[in-house]
Length: 106
Image (tube, rainbow, N blue to C red; front, top):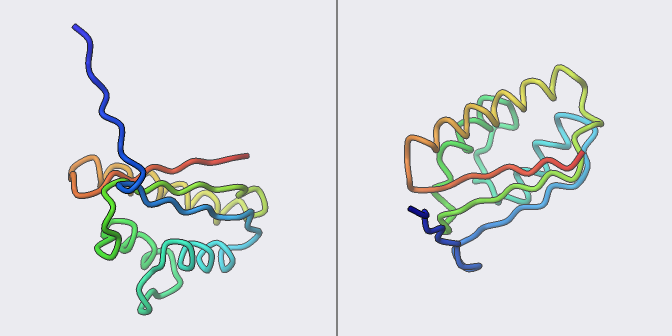
């Protein structure tokens, strides 16, 4: 038996392309800008996780976040961000309001 894959229509996808970053501050600013975070975003890791597990302001079901480069991040910040990505993916695996996908280009 074959599973049928249903592809999202372009209008059902929100895409954010994050340029190469070299610091936590630049990463958070780029994410905030490209994902159109609400104005109350606190510019810290906890606030990022809170918004990554909400996305109430994005109407499209599928959210794709493309990173063009994270190598410039300090190792400790990169590890925290990878942990947030993992926790975000686990969160959305439980709920079907959004599908959040991360693409890392290194």
